[in-house]
Image (cartoon, rainbow, N blue to C red; front, side, top):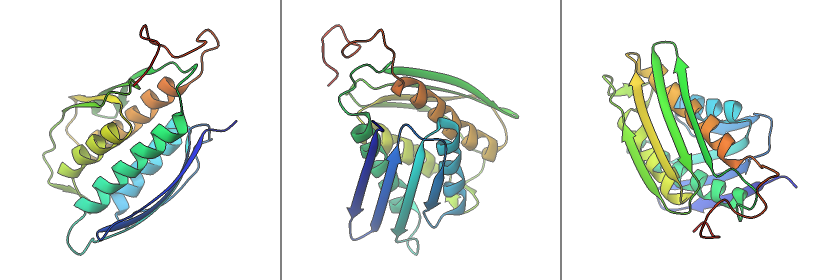
Length: 196
């Protein structure tokens, strides 16, 4: 059975509709109103082989912060809902991904305990219409809403576009690995017998 989550979130700052499938083929239909952010989420979808439909209407006249952060919250919740009870999944995933000059490490543990570590710096304040400081806010929101342990570390890179793109693709590959089923795992992969 395909693992799908359909969510809506409405606040005074954003209105978001999201349909997310872990067992997709890399198809996306994304409109956040922030072109570079759409590009990053499309890369996440395609390289994780997920399916994602995402519509975001936010207060971009203020800035992009609420739209990006709330998208992270919704996507994190969608990941958690789609993963379900975690029976039979690998739980851990990791990727060191090159993107031209950039090299990014991403590691994921679907432990049920949120933790976020981020080691990255951008020389640019903005890429397209996305403030680079919001990339950290997005991944922080995803990690805590999905209750995952998420580490992202930039090992090399000069070009901000390449660094950001490598982050999203590395996260996609690590998450895909963590959510795969392994027939040898009969329950949840934990000595405690639970992932919470």
